[in-house]
Image (tube, rainbow, N blue to C red; front, side):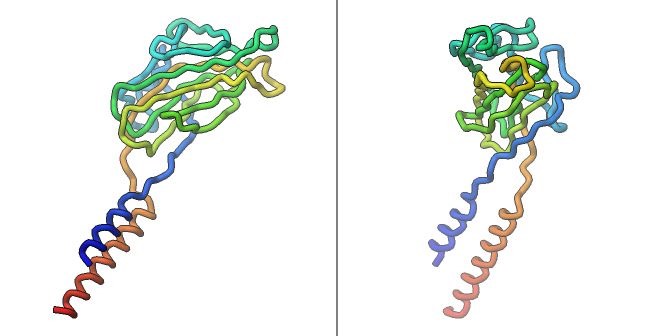
Length: 203
């Protein structure tokens, strides 16, 4: 009976929560786009994406450029007869349970696809979005990787399909138990009570 209890509790504790994904305004930042804090949580590492990539590796056949040390641009130049997509990747050196993609969006920006640890966290239209952060929380506590793909697509209002990147941020958020966690804990306590009663009756 004890073995059954242990196995049941292990199954209960193996519950994995889904990622939480949201866009928020950039707010106060350094000249390089580092937000310093995200939703009140200090940034523990900032991977700067300026012209040439800096802390990011850039690949693909699409043209690229940037704004000094502040922004990395992945161009969509298909309107000029130079088609091709490109992407930028970076890897953090610190362990965290949350990350943020620090982005800019104006009149000539298009669609970008975002990945954390090679997990697709969404494709978004960056046209006139302004300076924002794609925040991904409830991750495992490891050193994460980020990837942004310029898809070469844009909506009819945008002049091009460019993607502009300030960088990436790693930070930690406090663990908040979900309702399912409390329910499973209660189920475990009930099971423990059942085992104790069973032993008492058979003593």
